[in-house]
Image (cartoon, rainbow, N blue to C red; front, side, top):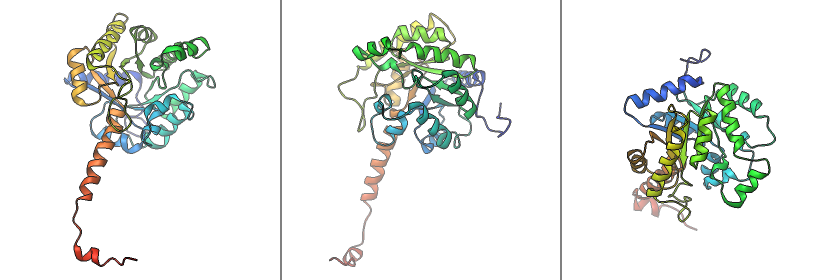
Length: 296
């Protein structure tokens, strides 16, 4: 159903986003969601056939040449950055693909119901829980849990977004989190297996194997599916960095698609710009033109 004011697709009510994704699966195709930190990324993700475009605050750091983990640090207002990228860069350029806004649900300075209303009013079709405490562990995670910044606030945000008719696509790292997100009403659950490997700023040692990724992804799926059968389960991160990696996960688990941020946006830019620059460096220059340059 087109937007009555623009005649274009965005924004979509939750039911229509779900119908679009189900239609993709009925064609025998995977669901591919992609992070976009710039308008040009979003433009060509849509042209390539992406099913969802997700705006993360980490996209700004990623496309500035820094690691995506910057999005978890106190380097800016995560909610404001995601809103700014969406409002000024992505939403004006995307025509049909539903656009999802990353929400830092534990931000104590925001009334979450009020913020979600602003997200919906801006034209986003749904929300995602990023930055997420699901990928924080150890003593620091325990401190967050005990000092009012628990991951439970992310579950509560998803439940609230569901009531507001926003599509919800969420990150989890454990079966317990998957169960909680399913109970909160999440429409799509992404099994997050760690920071993406590869490229100039991907992790090396801090990563799990593909074999472990398969086990972790399926464990997340099994836990969520015991609560509800209508959830889309996707994979993300760690060694799942290339199309063949995502294909391997889909083949060995019940995942029906993939969410790429660094693996789509950053690695694509790194690879293509490097190769294109190298090609330009190989173009010929006439000897006479070089000799005509006046050297000091």
